[in-house]
Structure formats: C-alpha cells, structure tokens
Length: 415
Image (cartoon, rainbow, N blue to C red; front, side, top):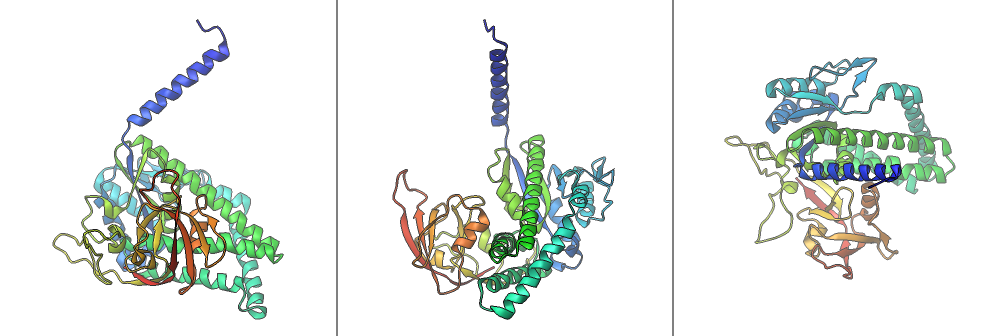
C-alpha cells in the first residue's frame, strides 16, 4: 500500500503519461498540406489566381481548412460558425470560405493569439521601418566607400533573392510557389536579412539597426512556433484525416521545418496526394537518384498533367551551387537536382548525411546542428569555387568513417 502522498501523485502522473502516450501512438498521423499563398498578389498572378487557389483547396478534400488569422481581431472573432468573418479583408480567408462551402467543412484560425494587439504594443512595424532605414543608410555609405565589401555583396545577394521571389510570385503557379526552389529563395532572403546583415551591422558598430533586425527575427520565429503549435493541435483533433493550411509563402518553409518531426503530422505537398491530377514541379516531384536509366523531364517539359488536359509548361530557372536539397531541420540530403554538380558527381544520394562542410581549402564546419539558413549559407558559393563535404552514406553502419566529396559549384537549371 502506498502511504506517501507525493509517491501517489508521482505514480498517478506516470500512469497518465503512459495513457497519453498510448493514445498518441494508436492514432494515425494527420496529413498536413502547407499550401503557400500570395496574399493580395493572387489578384494579379494569372497562374495562381484566387480561383486557382480555391480549386487546389477543393481538390485536396481536406477535413478542415486552416487560415493565417488570429482567433480574434479588435475584439471580434475572425471565424464564426466555421466560416471566416474576414474583417481584415484577407483574400485567402474569402477563398477558404468558398472552398469550405464546396466541401462542407470548417475554417479554423491558427495564427498567434492577440497578434495585432501585440504588434501595436511593441511597435513592431515602426521598429521594422527603423531597422530597414538604418540598414539602407549604412549600405549607401558602404557602396560609396567600399563597393567590394562583404556587406555590399550580401546586399546584392539579398536583393537578388527578393527579385527572384517577385518574379516567381508574379508568374508562378501553385506548383512553383510550393516547390523547394521557391523555398530556397526565401531561405536565402531570410538568411541574408536576419542572419548575415545583423552580424555585419554589429561588427561595423551599427548597433541600433542590428538590434532591430534581431528583434524582428525573434518575433518572426516566435510567431511561427506558435502557428506550428496550433497546427499540431488541429492535427490531433483530426487524427488520420487531412488538413490544408493556408500560409503566406514566406512562412511555408519554416512551418514545414517546425512540423517535420511532429509525430501527429504527416507532411505532404498538394501535388503528392492521389487526388491531385494537375501540374507538379517535375524536377522535385520524382527521385533524382539514377536508377535503371530513369531521367527527369527536360527544361520546359511538364509531368503529371491533368487527365485529358495539357498542363502549361513550367519555365526553367538557373541556380548556382551544388544542387542538393536538404531535409528541413537536418543535414540529410532530400533530393539532388538533375544536371547539378551534386547529381553529376555520382557520389551523393538522397538519404546521405553531410556532417561537415569546408569552403575550398578552409577548415571543416560541423553542419549537424545548423539551422536550415545556416546550412545553406555554409554550402553555397560562387560558380567555379569548390566545397568539400564530409558525408555519411545513407546505408553506412554506426561508427563509419565519413567520406570526403569535393564539388565545384556551377550553374544548373531547375524546372
């Protein structure tokens, strides 16, 4: 007989924990599709119009549609009776309502509670404007006094990433906006803006704008973590079913990263589910490993066309680097881009783990605990330069010695 009250409480907590774990293990994971959206730009993007957005949502046949809205705004609920009340004029919310009517499912908000009130309280947008103004002023001086400096180069890379984002957002269909190629553009942009620039500003003594960008990054990270938690909560309520999460395209990659290990979530792309018969990103939808002479579609070709309809060709885009996509939150290779240095070398395959990387003849940097932006920054570089990778093959037994793979970065096309 247990006499100690503390021992009884401990045993009760342990029993509850085991019961919860058992219930969780017994549930089928919920398919979660993070559908990247363009907010107001849907009105001007012909290939990803509001009607296309609605059709994609309906085609997924989700059990519920999650929208990027806080539970309430200015004291009024953003969702009532399963439909967005849309006080802020969100075009995604409007399309979510139409799709929900077609499917007879509910719309659920998943953004941060009290988001708008918090931003007003902490002066978020004023501090954002001040940080960018400080950065622009400092960069203008750098361009006059040191046009070949690292800061000017970083600004060019960030500007190029923004230009690529704008170009893709104006012309890309949902398969492009929801592709790893688009995610890479956003990762590069955020890596420069929230990672490299604050460090350069701080090193130059520009403390105020540097702290401004660090503040913006902290708020961004916290908001995405809260959004991911809400998605997980919804996934538990719809165990074994499918949810479509409408997320601004800049949130997409980080939400996928935060949900990658969630046991109740099975992440899918909209073009990976059996119900979808339309266009897919051909380079990324199939395995890049060469097996049995299989080859990926050429530039401008389109795979996965709709039954009875010819899908529009996906334009080719030129990137520079080694051409490997990594698992979100890991240094494990997810895909190799056809025609890229990584794929052409024949030394790398999906599932291999890159545990360290070195620029040219410099020392190796451990990549196993790096964030996705840090990993990309460690491996990226100019065409013609080399990077050395320490790699553990996917089938390597525990304790194996990593092999060193040397790659020369080059241009390659993605569709």
